[in-house]
Length: 144
Image (cartoon, rainbow, N blue to C red; front, side, top):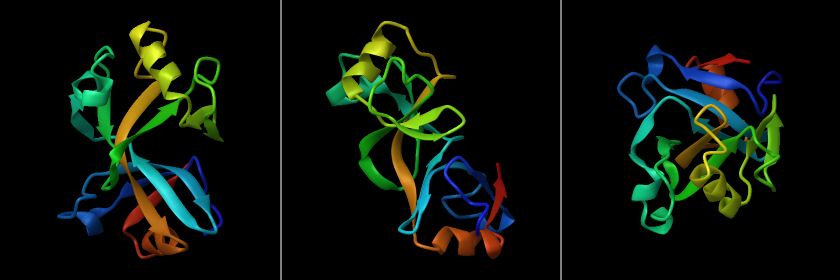
């Protein structure tokens, strides 16, 4: 599916009602010959960054439930490469990852807000061709 790319948004359809992806919006952050990676953008995790033991020195900042894969790690999506070095460009001024010390500093100083940065526990992953097949089968709708 040639229109599917990093920066695309997908939304679950009625086919996924009753699954963990019911009423889910996902930003595709990587899409290549190895597969696809996405972050769920509409489901709060229910805890704040400062509640995690390794980040208890930070100010409160909401966490999102990024998906069922690798829930032991924190993933950062941001629009502030001027404050957070090392992020990978996705599209439209969005970056994935970066220097976590700078992320915490930006939170603690109030230099970023929830419109400029989101933090995710876990991600969604698909093997090569799997997401395109799910879209073609009607499980997801693709938007840009």
